[in-house]
Image 1 (cartoon, rainbow over the protein chains, first blue to last red):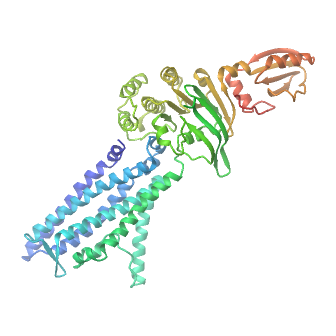
Image 2 (cartoon, one colour; image 1 turned 30 degrees about the horizontal axis):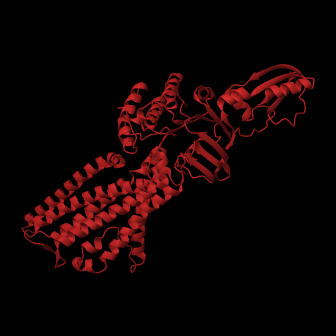
Image 3 (cartoon, rainbow over the protein chains, first blue to last red; image 1 turned 180 degrees about the vertical axis):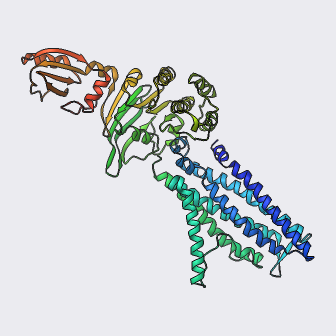
Length: 250
Length: 301
């Protein structure tokens, strides 16, 4: 029954997200196909990927942030933490129920969005199981998996960060999370401007999705990079649980 | 099975230099209606929060239904109805909150929830945030009662309520909790309400339990003795709570053995004016030190 509470909080966001992502992807697909037909040239699936990737990441980050603002952090902010935490359930139960159910919804959104993307690519280059990225053929399945993973990792990171911030600072948690994100992006720009040899990790996996070595990357260090990012994303709900277990509920 | 629903021993809760609960020793018998009395800031709410597992004690022991809230809070909360902040999930209606609550409690009763919504005249379709203070409190109470709890802990349940709603709540508590043999632990500083329903009383001040016992025993034993003349030196008399002098008379408040003290005073040449029993309000004022001469009393066994 606790999951029902999270569902009540998140269902409008879930519905709107599915609708918006589908509409955005549909619109981009129409523009890209239209341009290709107008020029009388073959459309470029790799270009569509890059556009899609860029377009998707912002709403996905926002979605992760939005989902992180639901659950016990919101309850604490609304002053009903004592009520929720006096229901028979461990602090871990509440945290991981929120996190698990939120991530399940985000997974559905990410997969749905990328499925539309896959369909768009398929229509642009029909009959092909691969596309050309920088002149090198890359399997569509690899691209699909990479995009789903990248989207989910970004959502998970923003979700966990906002969730932890909300537990820590209650209603001001979302602002902390946005501040952290902005600070990281600024720091990344500053570092790349002054120290050209140093690059802070991208919050998405863009560098892989536009690389012709996607297939090879799965066998190289992509798995490690994904595991590290997943580990960092998981640190936040773990920290939220520990914080809730240590502190008094007021 | 332990015959105590709640017991604490040397329980402490410190917030920095503030000792909210300072060595609390309390024993609440199973099946009792226990009034936990204290002034604002005496430590009542902090104690309840620790018993419910919402706050961590700084040190000391506590048991609720024979279990330790620090390690068995889930098992305790399954068997305990709690009304503490009177703040539920604002966006939920009464019906939503019933639905939310139902899944947590094995002994939840929809029939009881329906009964209380009718008895307490609650609009279950209205969102919690739109309810009046009285209706919010009633909804909190409904959720606590419908879960079929063995122990019900209520923190200031009548605060901010009008007399009609207060009367409704007290009737429900007496008829459906006390008469069913469940334990009701009720914190309040509204003494007349507690006096109306409580069998046991504990008085807390500055985080310490100053007095605990059966209310009937307290009322029978606490007396005020008025005599003409100045106060006599009675340092050896252990049952004196306070001594007040003025306008040619002296008042002795004792927690026990009033007749013996009256006889002793007369034997010393004092002229006895009267010996009267104290009500709960007077007992409370004496114990928390509102008299001119304050003598801390021990906990009554």
